[in-house]
Length: 163
Image (tube, rainbow, N blue to C red; front, side, top):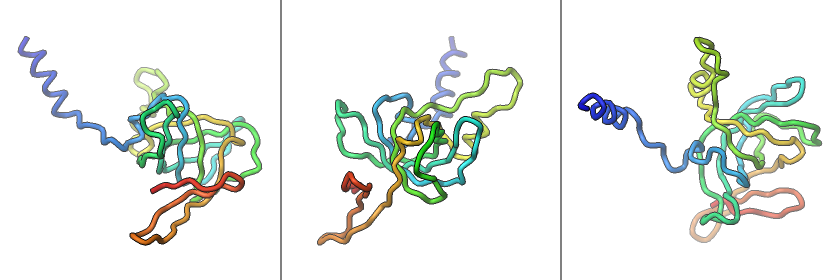
């Protein structure tokens, strides 16, 4: 009994809490929209394009308690399928939707530990979506009377306040 008790407390001591704004708090949630900045060059695969995105904000589904975008942090792999008019380049600001999937290993006992490899690079998950569903835009700052605020501009859809 003492071994179980000490093992449980050891787990609590060595398992720090995940900060509230971490992307890993939103794994597998449907209906979310993310904004972020592309931090890698596009990698071409036979059936997809993969880019790394440093996520900035998340908008939860309408039925959730928060309707405004929340600030988040964390890098993900964004896997794009199909054709798009946009080409995504390093430092582009983009908006996309899809559930964030946690990184997982391939299930080969004694094989390469892909999960630890990506975590060491700061990549905490992946999103799979169609390339034509990703919007490319710019983050703008505007001065206001008491400071400044940031907004997102997407052609044809107007502005979204990010402050």
